[in-house]
Image (cartoon, rainbow, N blue to C red):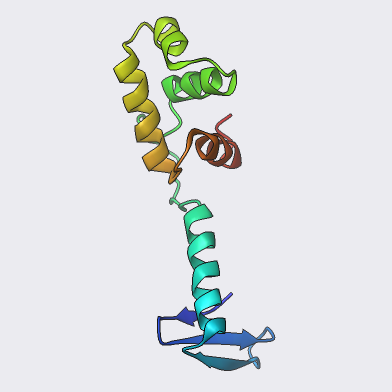
Length: 121
């Protein structure tokens, strides 16, 4: 992957280690492709959080989040999830939307994939 990349140029390592040299890629189709590839990997990436021994009580995934994800992966509708959780359909939609935003997912399918990658399921 590129070490340094902008819209006008990109520095790519050639090899590994301390004695590796680099290649400079100027504005071209290659640069455009590398930029697009970077954006895809960036969107798929998971944030790295510093961990401490005293975990935050509101840190995700909470028990409520895990329950919601379990119901979603079981294929339940929003109406069925709302009944099971004792909340409104709007609350279910809001919680799912919040999780999608938190995990950078554009769809419910992506939400499931991202949650699984993080070990939330």
